[in-house]
Length: 251
Image 1: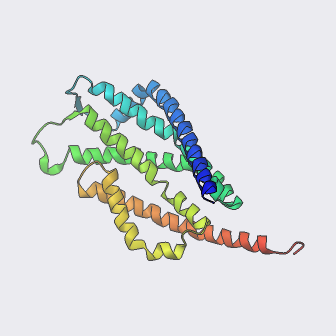
Image 2 (image 1 turned 45 degrees about the vertical axis):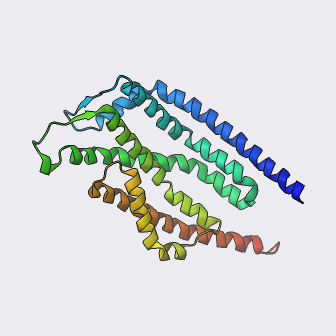
């Protein structure tokens, strides 16, 4: 029995190592692709800043590091569906046939919801920057000269974080589909969801101001509610599947 358990553990570790290697190779490839288009991505990010914003850099390697940062975030974003697929393939042996089917069906939606989150951030970031740079109470106090590395870190972190946050409905739907959570349980735990939303918003939002943090938190709470709504359909669908599978042949 002990030998069998050790063998199983070794097999799991080998499988984990294989999936990690595949993921690392994929991220390396997508980072290379992202680096090739980094200058175009930077132009898009720069357009999000308010007009007449003056960027500066204070270190010799700052510009180079910016391009590497854009490449890494862009590479991970491009590889995200493949990374999720590798995670699915690792946990696949522990899932039933129906659970595997739903995971495969949801894989394309991972990229779609991430893109929706990034698009939301793309329209939200300019308004946040306009508020922060042209803060009414600090008008005419100083002229903004923003470090380019700080600006890129701010925007990329926010866009990437919102992209991941928008996966929340998918995660809730799948957990409800496999019976881990129920709509009633999710509704009863709404207080915890609100607290987690504000904590996550504070982590996603690179600024300490409460206004933008609250806006992001409200968006996260709305995503949680969408997840609860989807969980209702997930549970209903699961019950129908059970009824159909439990019917005798010819019935």
